[in-house]
View 1 (cartoon, rainbow, N blue to C red):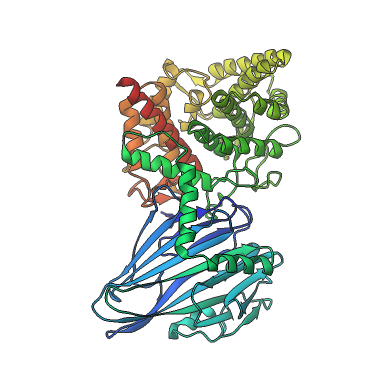
View 2 (tube, one colour):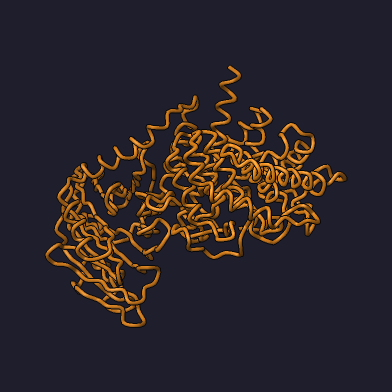
Length: 618
């Protein structure tokens, strides 16, 4: 069964990067956090020589044991590598500057043995600027002691805070190949390489760290800058080379701590407190500074780097519940720009709001969930100016939904939540019910009384159709899809209660459906899946599905059941405190995207609800 490579995420809401377990830079998105992705391979290596051996290796294939963590309350990553053969400890501190598009990679080397050791450090880059290696160029800039890769208006520069010993600009598979040239611990010094029509270019820099005596430490910082021309990236290098590495770290640390410290809620459980803050920090990274969109995950396999308006609405609601209203408001304004001319939204978009990602068609739960979220934002802020700004979008959306209701069934046909087939899905129509009900309430607030009455009547008709057609009395459960009929038990049926309030959690039909869902899964590792018979990635428990059931039990005021589901989720977090889409049904390892925004959003909502219930009982 496939697993997901461990990775952490860092960024500044314009540049987004992921760092793997072995210190490799796996993704670098710029100038937006979803596109383009420029990195094929970017990783450190080291040559060491002591009285026992002289050896070179990349951190990915050297006998290193690594541990990772974030600096508390920041998006600064620490990776500690231990090599007992070389008697070395290397600590990598990785972060993106909050005010410059510069990735800082600081490496601290410590000799933990009794004998002197000589070190030479290498940093290698294999790029596909703008997501293709065609026409890439790499060259060494002697005056600034740095290597630049460029294509059109994408410039990638890297250099160190020490004078380099060697450099190499090469071509894959040839004698100049920088990846292979390092194994003798020397670089050949080629200073320019152009894509030749068949083979991609790569590059490497090396630095002499020197001889470390027992317990001695030395450091090197590698700066990676991105810009639209040579002048810009050279200026970024010069500016940040002048600063002490500790000063760069301090200003980044202060930025993130200032942001997260505006979240004032302290949970009784310190683990939950830490993981909720980590979730908020992750969600902030997945929110674009300039456009306001929120991506699903920082990954390409699976390709989840898009903004699904539905997923992002749950993130926005989590932001709102935690007091980060500005992030939420920016997202809803992004939705207004993304809205299609007829009033709906497609499945997913690039962060540039009018550019669709690969998509089936307009998907009704996307726009409907957004309208639900807008109302939740208003409930928490009481900002009528916000409502007035978004009123044209709300009106267009409500009229669109009203226009496509099937007069025969009273329901809407669309691509379903899981994007697998067209049909009259229970979840999707519950979303439309709530969106029309919400639009009616907003219209009343804005004195649009005729529209309010019209949309309210339509909402009630959809509710009536759902209670009549989606309920299977013979099985005592709601069915997944009315037309074509699909009786599969699906976690999305909880949407009838949370978030769309078609029925209260205490209703006997909802109780029976929720019980059936919980009994439908018997994974070795525990947890709740999407639906019985799911085959995606082999069919596994999903973090968000498990938490969705927890959110149902919140509505029932069932602390014990909710607490068990939250505890299960906590135990499935990665070493860095990140939540994946799925976990392996046998061993609990991460499956599919990590971190997944929707998983983190539901975790925040569930922990807030659990804490509030416990407080109410005291």
